[in-house]
Amino acid sequence: MELRSKAEHTEAIQRDRKVAVVINTRSRRGRRHYFEALDLIHGLGFEPLAEFSVVNPKRLRDHLDKALATKPDLLVVGGGDGTLSSAVRHIAHRDVALGVLPLGTTNNFARSLGLPLDLPGAVGVFASGKVADIDLGMADDRPFANLASFGVSVEVAGKVKPWLKRIVGRPAYPLTALTILPGHKPFRAFITVDGKRHELLTHQLNIANGRFHGGWQVAKDISIDNGQLVAYQLGSGKKLRLLAETLARATTGRWRSLAGGPFVVGREMLLETDPPLAADVDGEVRLITPITLRVVPNGVRVMVPSSFEDR
Image (cartoon, rainbow, N blue to C red; front, side, top):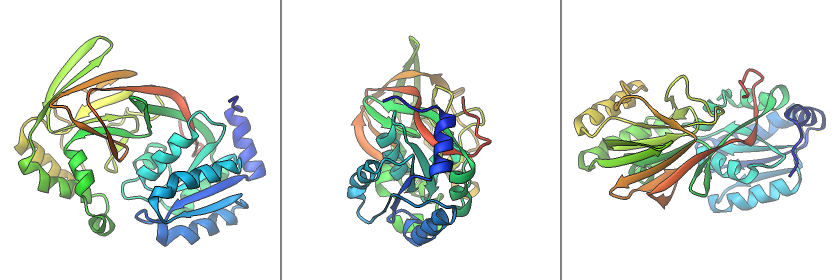
């Protein structure tokens, strides 16, 4: 499909206001803010071609397909990182931009785009921002927007309680991790990049396309638009160290260290683990190591603030 220039795409959105809206009302804030979001969108002069409230998450993809069938210039999607990751997969390489309503617990994707996390600010970007193209991650043949993770986090994703996320928000994940870590065994990971094989022993390994994990910035020089993936471990193979760092994160919101030295950076990585491990790819656990991860530069169009550095 031939794409308009980003400037032409931005102009079309601001001139024609052709949008479709899909909001996951099962997300942390989706149900509470559904009508407020629609009022804000209408208040900026947008008359949506379609508006969908996703009550059953299993129907999210159907709703996204129906919304895209109206041929909007801007697909506005509200929800958490899992919802937005599904939207990213739907619009990859298409002549439509994603407008983000950050209605989840951690909102890693929205943070990576530099978006306001308040609803009026996020909606305001649709009228005052610009279309940018950002990187798309691939885990084997599965696209992802933000992160592929291995180890403790996969168990946490399956065990964190929805009521705990609603009450405490982001700390729900490290607090759940504290209940899992005492019985967790470290694993050995082998990451091959540009012919060089890196080996480490850890309880948790992340491979990031975006800049944020758990709602906190991984590192200042990581970008969702630099054509690179970044692999890093949290803690080390020493359980007490990881317990201490997880507790610090739960109470202060920061990691004291990213143990294991420098990040491993590259456009493509082969990850092998001993033992083989399941991968959490933007919240969905489907793949098993070994996995090849790579980045597709400028694979997705998004609406971002004018200040976003588009490379």
